[in-house]
Image (tube, rainbow, N blue to C red):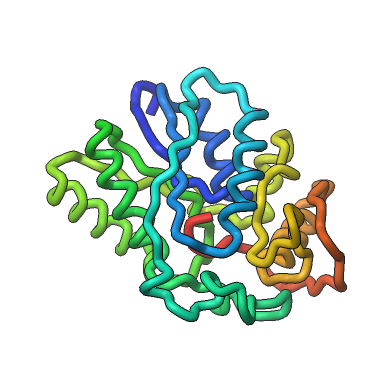
Length: 235
């Protein structure tokens, strides 16, 4: 990887931010790529992402690139675009599924990479991710299709595929993780503390034994679930 150019699909969440720092030490040039889709938390997420990136100092790290791929017309009344009935702390992981999320993100990123002669797209999928657009079979198939369609060889990498979110927190404990953002119902610039993603974030810090310096709006009781904690889709 040392002499390659790559991009990371970054959301501002724990997984993709730790992945960015991890890969920045391994490639010649690394571009953080953020795709705006019109989801309710993106404005706040971008504020925190820029703060996180400003704290990094890697020679090959490129400026943040923002692309636009609105989904409001497709998702219509979905909670992610309306902010209504956002999944709470005690909902199942399936409640936060965003239909076709990885398909959309990777398709846009593939075109960007082909035009900019970048050969690698990395994303922070974790162990146990249950969604159909996160499987190795799907990613390998899309990798082949995109390479053929764009006449540009592309490789889609998921370096954290064998890790849980708890292990990602442990891996990134030397980074300013308090500047990452995982909330789907932000209050001002703060994590709400009570949505599905905030609960997952809080559990992962607790299980990792790493101090959670995140600024939460409130801290309701936390349910500790058996087994590993995972990030859903490309965060």
